[in-house]
Image (tube, rainbow, N blue to C red; front, side):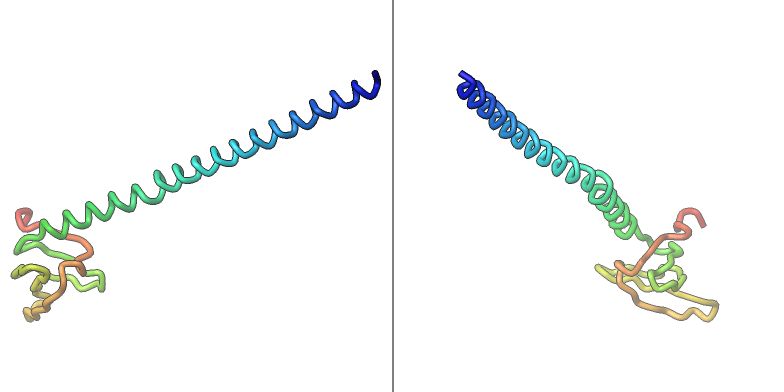
Length: 113
């Protein structure tokens, strides 16, 4: 009788251990899903939003806008072609052709002047 009780107790312990391992693996999966969600909402989504705003700014460039390039050059747009912009810098009217992708920000819009 004692032997039967010990065998039943061992079987119950094995079942509890198997259930604990299954619960632990489910918890690991849940943690991975939470990590992916955190990565998406704090890293990927804001970066895509910023890229979208930058592309809208570059596509909205107009002749007369005062801009700053990623290299720190400040100038006024005098002409726009497909992927390039001609800017005028300084008092002597130096003209520089740059790529639209080199525009960092628009300091003064043409309609604000």
